[in-house]
Image (cartoon, rainbow, N blue to C red; front, side, top):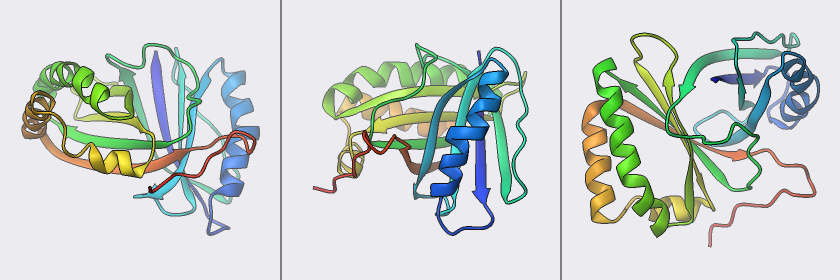
Length: 201
């Protein structure tokens, strides 16, 4: 299975509502026509501009999408999933989804995957959080990885900066193996009937 992560920008509007609607409608039709699925459409909380989104798709082959003139494709990344996701299905749980981008050396990838696997049970058992996917660049010499993690809200994300000791040790070692990391906080786009505001309480 291959995962595409598209970063899209609305050139005509300051917000992302129109772009989200377009992704849900015309762009999703293109994705489905290619036999692929939508993992999620993610709007910015912070780290992306207010008129940018991430569109994450999955399928067995590479694919290309076409966009209107007022939508700019800022970047696209092709990944292989590692330990997660276990099920290649759309995300449905409202909350905060943090995209953590890692620059890595190719020979560090396997250890980073193992360290993540070791830390997740304690980490997820201590906070209202769940790892949605750990991905590695789809190339013979990968230099990029992506971790997508769900948090109930931003308060939980803040609390999780202080994990239990055994998880913390694995995360510290993982940090030592990365060249740099960039977290981006987003919210999963939900139909209006299902959407919820993020609580800061």
